[in-house]
Length: 295
Image 1 (tube, rainbow, N blue to C red):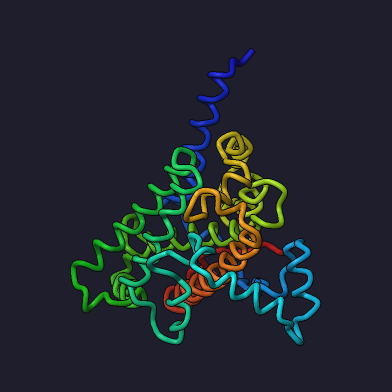
Image 2: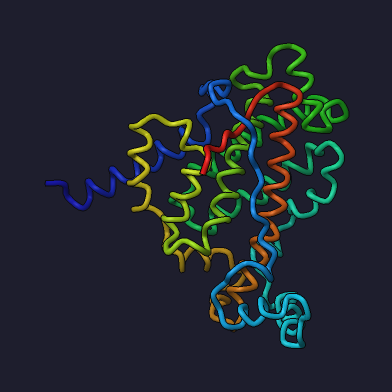
């Protein structure tokens, strides 16, 4: 019979293996995944998403003609007292998403990714440390390429085109391969944000995000190991607390609704950036970063 200690060790090892393969498995042949890109996500406007609260339901009933209560809640969410990880993040995809009619700037993109990676420590430093490590490895190797010639590689498109021209873009260790895996990681995170509110537990949200993104790249053994990850995932309450700026903020009236609204605004921008990069890979290199199976 397995002892509690052996179960805990197995859970930790399984978690390390899973996230490492999920987010840093650069040896996977990304040409093996084919299909049409489908990033038509439902946008989560604060006034059209079901939050379940009486306060929010009142908003939904007055979308066409907002009343004073709706304005007061909006002002409340704009207050510094309601700041959270998504409103206080120093480099946000929200700003980047307003310029997607132009090539994505390498430095700005990497800064946003670095800022997002801090989220893993806030959720659970021990459980998510392998994911953060994978994130930072991707970021560092892309940055190394950028630093060799900042002017030449000022955009992600320039990096991909240069490596594609040398037929190096699919090689292990190329900046393009790192960008491909970093984008897959970002899509996983985007799917996680998309599921946190609706799923009953944080583990359920992680599972849904995994199934909608990187699961397709794993064999049966690795997929089976995913069930063990739940033992290391924090509770939903702890996860939400991790997004707060000050401990105890989740107890403030209206705070949770404002937190979700901020999350969806951020996630819509993140999703748009990922879609842009996917389109770039498809156009410039005929590579599909993420195939989305039919629902």
